[in-house]
Length: 453
Ligand code: CTP
Image 1 (spheres, rainbow, N blue to C red):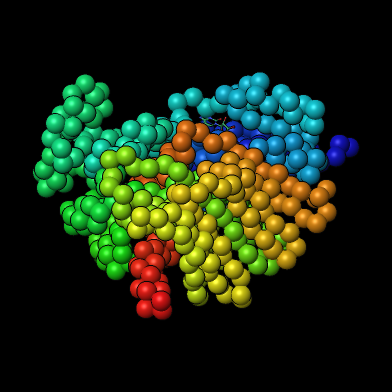
Image 2 (image 1 turned 90 degrees about the vertical axis):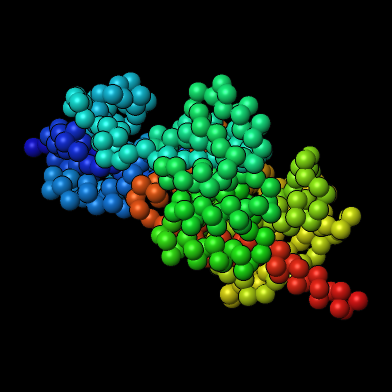
């Protein structure tokens, strides 16, 4: 009598379709026990699958509901397949023949079987039929506009076709030989009056508030360069309008949407490093906006950079209970700031930013049992490691990172619009308010300090 034969297969299984079911049945027919590995959304995004429409949970549930599937697991990282072969004592690895050859390396652990794929159906095709393209307009001709256009080409659900900028000649020059963006406007009202559903704003900082407000009032979803408003009251007002109108308003803090960053937060939840005592992150940049005046708004280190370290602090430790600033000034604006926050249970957040000093841009999350280290530049998270007193226990995590990282943010923005969701779990309204703690608190702090001296 033969023993039980275990078969394993993997896939995204977005919008579960006949092709998936046929393949899973074929896989099951090879043995007695079928394990299906469903790819986690962060893993999918890290390997360039940016347009999956359903959450990991939803996709897993759909596969679990099939009575011939015996076990469903989640696939979170490269190299997991080989680990699973050993862990589950797998006899056969099965996969569709669109992958022929790609998994031959697993023959070392198990028997690899490529099965016929069902013709004429795929998740990509279903997504295309199910969702229409989102029309997006660009606002301003800023530093990141070109990169945004380029990166958006990787998000199949978005179509950029218009631009608005104050400068009529610049708009004309931009659209003249542009294959994609044919329509240019120098009148914002006319621009908002078109069929665009969403805007990406990249202008000088002090115009953000008015441009966002008008866009929201014209029922457009908004993605805007950070900071989206220069005062907390204005920011809250904008978030309130967005909420009331069920629109998305996101600051372009791209770190929040990176697959490796989100995977790191998930790993952290597993609790291996114990109780978290401190989060420390640094971001410095000597970059100067050439066309901007030298002002606190344009060049202040806190204003331009602090959202990034504050994001890590907020995501890991939650809202702060108290805050202190240790800044250095030059010509009337801050060229560096050390921001120390206290959180629940006494944990401490240390956010360091500078535009007038260069430092190592790494991050450390310290716990009672170990720590997570994210090497510079941590805000473009590509890898991280979990380290302990015993250095043999170190675990390294490495992820793919394509382009400048913007595509992950654009993909989330598009996905929210398609799914009729007005807030993102990766960057919630509470996160947005917390990480934009500056400059109101900073101003208050300065006033206070003036009084003291
Ligand atoms: N599959 C299949 N026949 C299809 C589509 C998929 O046999 N028409 C198989 C794949 O070969 C793979 C599994 O189903 O073994 C999961 O594939 P997945 O990539 O999730 O599905 P696709 O429809 O190919 O998704 P996409 O279009 O996003 O690539």
